[in-house]
Image 1: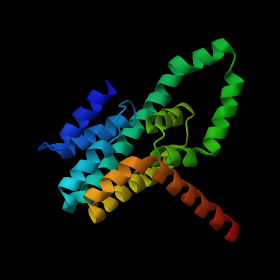
Image 2: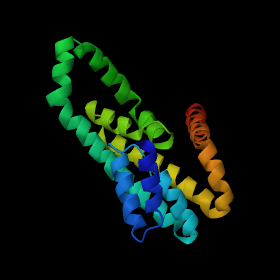
Image 3: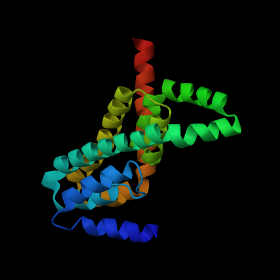
Image 4: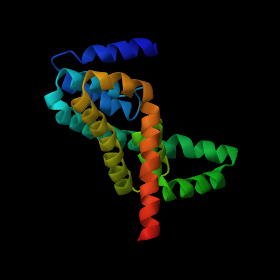
Length: 193
């Protein structure tokens, strides 16, 4: 089933309304769809490199809006479904501890989910469940998703087809490396300032 979804998504890249398809895929991937927008973004940028920035911008905006939909799913369904289950099993105290921890580190958690192959949809829904500050959620989502899609588009724009294979083989490692460097920079700034 996942292979059929992957093939279907790849087929959208060559169509006339590919930008709208990218927006839709980016939106729904942030809350329910299993195939990442990169699958559509890569062939679209390679086909029309002069539109790389527009393509990355559409993917970013739609992904953040979809992230807000995921946040809403977590926020609104938790009270009706999640909280009664926690009460039934006696885990209200454990959830309060988890919620406190999640909200303390929320920006970093959303950043990691937005940049890396971690399922961003899980992060968006969990952010709603824990009622992470919406401003923090939006800012971290814009930065993380924007960095992911614009760096990918920049590499494709600059290097073209040869970089495609490299990105596809090493996307997870590249995202983790970037996130480690980002955290290292923040830690360095914190101790210097």
